[in-house]
Each structure stands twice: as structure tokens, then as C-alpha cells.
Image 1: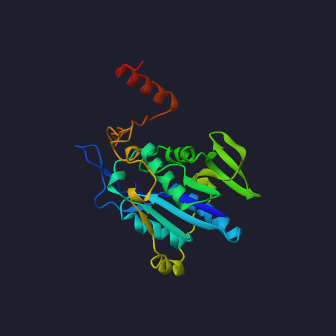
Image 2: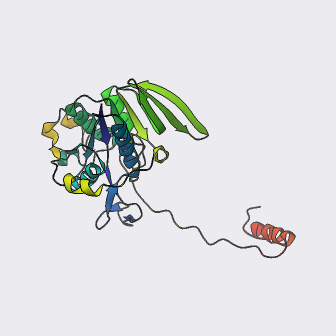
Image 3: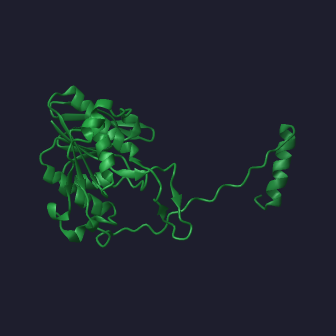
Length: 261
């Protein structure tokens, strides 16, 4: 069985700051991590590998050369090989342009049974790239997967809903996007960390892929981020003291003073 996992290196949101003048993310000095939902996607692929002998797991990402570190983390977790799509021609790609590039890379990797991706990336929160890749590959997709099993080439998944889940059966090849409830990602294995830095990572630029330069990059992106900002903190609340009736009376006075009632 062949599984491909789409991963992304993202800034650690606990450390992200926004430039008040430009409204853009300040990435300098901010540590980068494997996108959390992508870690769940990789873990599910590795669980299938543990269960079915002969399963091969590949990870693929688009980004700068520094994404090499994140890919080696994936190898240390148990992935078999890694692919990095890196070229200035891809810079500024929105979700549509990104999916064009990644879909092209997946086609070049070759035959596959399952493509896994995280539900969404924490630096964009669009949840669009995974479904768009499936459209470009012309394969069925199931999003928000919180449980997965495979038997005789058929996937049975629980798709998360706001008030429950729905059970969906889909034949491979198919694309699934993972949510955090799907599993708990494993840690890197100590013995595999050394091996991960000995393994070669395949790096492809735009000339290595069968993709039209007109459908990738900033100029090909139909959507743009106008501004990123941190919401203003809420003001300190007012505590009502006294008995319940006194608190209600005080609340009514305050609301009338503010012309709310």
C-alpha cells in the first residue's frame, strides 16, 4: 500500500507577533513546527503502516529550504521518504495555486492508495488545500475525519460534524483530511532521528514538475490576505456585589446609564 501525506511547516502560533504598521506576520525569530493537524494525518498513515506490512509512507511539502528540518522530523516519526517542492516561482501562492503545485508533485511521485492531509493549517485556517488537491487529482475526498479503518481497498471513516458524526465508505484512491480527535501523534524515535538525517530528501523546483507556471505563485493567486491583526483585548468586567436582588438593581442602573436599555 502506498500512502502520501501532505504536510506543512508553520510558525508556532504561541510565538506569533503581528507588525502593527504592515499588518503582516513577523516570522523572524519565530520557531517553526509541523502543522498539528498534519501530525495527526501522518500518525494515521503510520498506524496503517504498522498494521499492514509493505506499506510505504511518503511526506510532501511546499516551502523554503528550511522545511527540510520538518521533513526530517516526519522521517524520524516513521515516514519512508520525503519530497520538498521549493522554488521562488511558488512564492505567494494562495490555496488554489498551492494545490496546483502539490497535486503535480503527487502525480510525479506515482501511484498511491491514500492521500492524507491535515484539516487545516494554523497559519491560514482555510481548510481548502486538501479538498482542492483531491479535485486536481480527480479522486474522492472525505474531510474532518475523526476515525478511520481500511479493509479490502475500502475506507470506512467517521466524518466529524458539529453535533455528532457521519459514517462514510469510500474506495481508494481517496484523500482524507484529519482532525485532532483522530489520534495522538507519536514522538520521534531516538534511533530514527540519526537515520532521518542520513536519508536524502528529494527537492523539486518548478522545472521538475508538470505544472504550468501560470497557475502557481502570487500572480496566479485569486485571493489575497488584506490584513492580519490581533483583536483588541476586552475591557475589564464589572463585578456586582451584594445580594442577588441588589446585584440585579445595580446591573439595571448600569445598563440604563450606558443607554443599553
